[in-house]
Image (cartoon, rainbow, N blue to C red; front, side, top):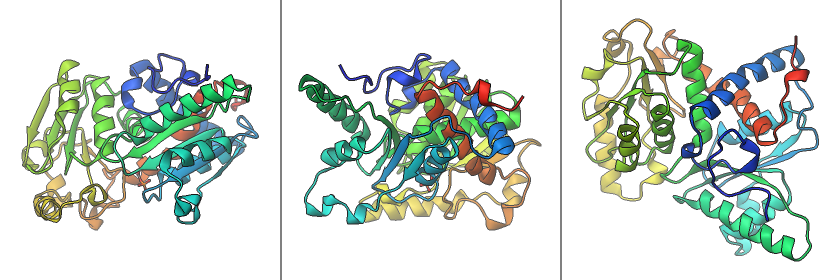
Length: 343
Ligand code: CP
């Protein structure tokens, strides 16, 4: 049997599965990454680089554009002594007719970790299941098992779990806890996969979740149900201002136009954003201590004049992406770095 099962709950054992959905992680698993990222950051500061994952190779197969996720996974692997690359998919054998699943197996033969971003909902689950099937077939033929770990870096309108580890780590660093935080998500939620994974993450910590969306792009029922089934107070609305004073975290969502095909729908979403821009004036209504987060890139959701406000945490959020992804990688290979950390 393949060493890696496609999508099982992690339950303390990161080494046994791919990372596809936040549903695989309960609170202790999430806290392992959140707290481990601090060790990674200390290590980076002390030593710059450490050979925990020497000779390990990461490939980020990014079918949709990215400036952060792919690059920070490569930096994370290189900081752990391994190597990483982002292939130019515009020059790949997809141009010669190779389909997505065969490309996945191809890059899996070249790597220990395969980070995948795709425009199709559920495609990374499909990739993991297909790879597992091919590995089992190869084992039956006496070939070596690949053992490549897959990480979902965003699959269409579905999920983006590594972003949630980044988001929760950012919140934990600011508030010192995650339990019971008041989280307000603002923007077009139907297409925004990072918010779907974050809703699941928030459900593990009993957060109060306000969801401000245009009527045309609500949060899918699946994520509302997960929150309410786990006892989280949830409010949905179309207006932002009533929630500004009720938030510990205001989390902005970009209109994810790459995941919208219909022009009328695009126009309706963009029109709704006119009421969703975070400005210094809007933030005058917020309690002291409220922070503004955004996974980035930012379009029109936050006024440029807010970038240097101490409550703007999106650049810190972006920077923590590397130590968080280092901890994810170390956990997936079950390599506790304690003996390598500074005293
Ligand atoms: N946050 C995020 O996923 O950014 P990129 O699209 O640049 O990777």
